[in-house]
Image (tube, rainbow, N blue to C red; front, side, top):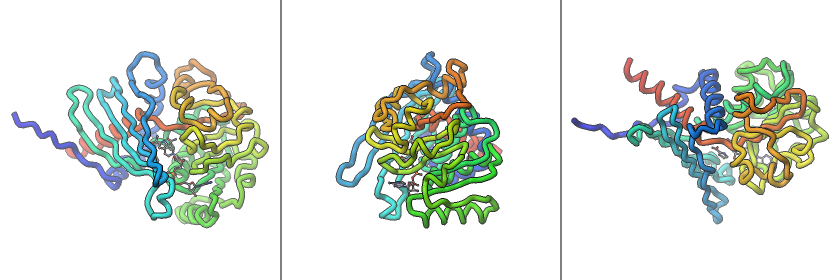
Length: 320
Ligand SMILES: NC(=O)C1=CN([C@@H]2O[C@H](COP(=O)(O)OP(=O)(O)OC[C@H]3O[C@@H](n4cnc5c(N)ncnc54)[C@H](O)[C@@H]3O)[C@@H](O)[C@H]2O)C=CC1
Ligand SMILES: O=C([O-])C1=[NH+]CCC1
């Protein structure tokens, strides 16, 4: 019997075709992935990711392997994160996700990583926000105007009807560009000239920047707000003022990763109260009335479930 071992290659355009407009399915897969990761039954095996520093070019190479038994799948995301790439007119995050069958080890697909990374990170935030934010949030503030800012805007406006969406960016022209792009699509957002103005009275805040030092201060944040911290994914970077970290109840995706990768957690010396998976499982409380922080690091299992969602949609399309 002939065996066609060629994996399919799904580029960003194809991935967009199979993932766009599917927030609810993606959020549901991601919710399951949080539960599988935080259950102690070994259904998901996900070591802390490896990274290699490219000192001369301010770059990093990440390798993120995972096995999920319920999905009968293995995946590894391999990405580079080059902080200065905007100066080269290139995306800061590039790479691929390799998706294998866990049954026989066959490589099924190679998927370009940026679209899935953007969508799954925002989808994961959506899960955390659903559990931790106050009911009926009215004001959303997004700090940053890049890839993650866009995908977070998309998913959070899919989930909630905000009265106001505010965007702040370090380079105001890029913030204005994003606001114009969204408003041209029929949304109503405003660009703020400073962080304090953007987050005043906000119910939900997203920080999605490449800042190395805190951009968000405790005194600016409304008590009871929910903050999704997406950037600062290394032990020496911070997006939040340590005082804000210490005044909030801190949740994360992976406690094991947070303790070695998150500058916001390590430098402020806060205790992680819970993984989001533990909240979904009912093992830990969701303190909606308190100021909450979801420190997102990003997990390989999120890439696996999202890549599988895309791959399954692609293969079922082929069979039509
Ligand atoms: N938690 C997770 O799963 C993931 C986290 N990330 C992180 O999210 C952050 C944003 O990533 P992308 O949107 O893909 O990048 P991007 O390059 O598309 O956007 C970065 C944004 O940060 C702003 N920025 C850069 N330096 C800054 C500074 N010093 N202070 C304030 N703002 C600054 C830029 O103006 C831009 O708006 C990065 O820190 C990245 O590592 C990215 C992917 C997944
Ligand atoms: O999970 C992920 O893909 C990443 N987290 C930080 C940079 C990229």
